Image 1 (tube, helix red, strand yellow):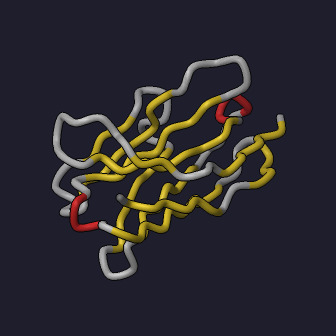
Image 2: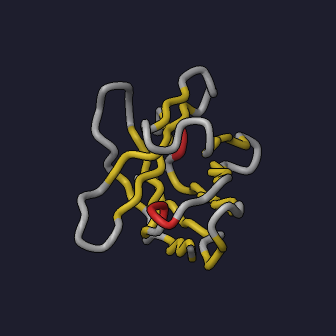
Image 3: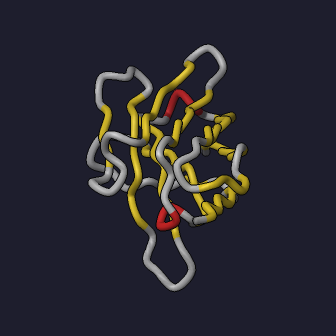
Length: 119
């Protein structure tokens, strides 16, 4: 099992930037990729971005393309989500999750970090 802990959330004005971190521990060697998801109140969970540990595969959700950037530090077992040009609609709880293999569902989740964008 992979344990994940998110950090970096907070309150930011529209147009601003924020960087989220996801620290992975445990059986990280059994993880293929790490993804970021978000869930706003009353809405379904939404895929934001994912990156394989080899950095060979990076994906973004349509709503964040060109504004959010995902990166990985293998030495520190950390995955980052740089969020730029934030909008009020980016307000949500952000979660990172581990994908055990390609085409498999994300099965280990962090506790989440809250991001609030004021307009």
